[in-house]
Image (cartoon, rainbow, N blue to C red; front, side, top):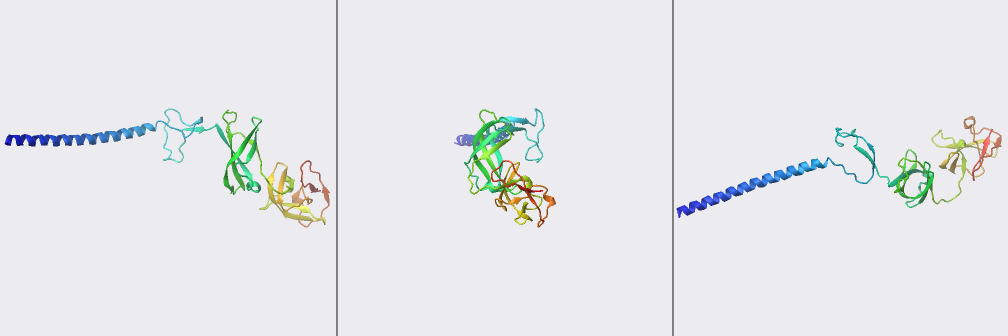
Amino acid sequence: MDDAEAKDLSAKAQVEAARSELASREQGLGAAQADHRHYASLADYSHITAPFDGIVTWRYADTGTLLQAGTSNSGSMPVIKLAQVNILRLRLPVPESLAGFVHIGDTARIHVQATGKQFTGKVVRTTGELDMSTRSLQVEIDLDNKDGKLTPGMYADVTLDIQRSGNGLTVPVEAVDRSQSAPFAFVVNQHGHIEKRTLHLGMETPRFIEVTDGLQEGDRVVVANLSSFQPGEAVEAKEVIVPNGKNDAGSGEE
């Protein structure tokens, strides 16, 4: 009986030893698996995956270059520059006077100067607020470029099809003085004296500026040598014919 009990105790001791060894090996396995995950994560840093398909347009690092972590140094350079060119985003500023008439889905006619071709697009998004420095609304139009005929960075002329009410009144660019906080023009009244009129401006071309408030059709405006005139000064008006332009005010002074 004593011999059997001794063998039983010895067997139990062996079982406990085996369990301890098993627990030790399981801990070693857990540590090895943690090391494996750690080195696998480090190995993942050797591959950079972009969130979209595109073309590498610039490479900032060569093989063997030491790169700093982007989160550790604000001045660190990227590895490459990637561009998605199958869809191009066209940005354009819309003047304050037209911002309220532009809506998502509006049709736009686009002429790319470099290629001489015409495209059609639609407004897909806007900033929703005016840029305080330029008083304009940033509008974006997406263009399909699957054939690769367009290159990012090209300039384009855009015509937006918007609805407006009222008639447009324009004056020559030379008739508007913007040297002060508010633009103004000199008008010759019916008595032949100079009046200063504060203007609210709209769209602008290289030759004409739309006036939304401050002038009426038929007003005679000074279109040259504005610095030579003062409000209240008596002048003799001489009409100047402004070539082309419907609703163009074209009177001047000499």
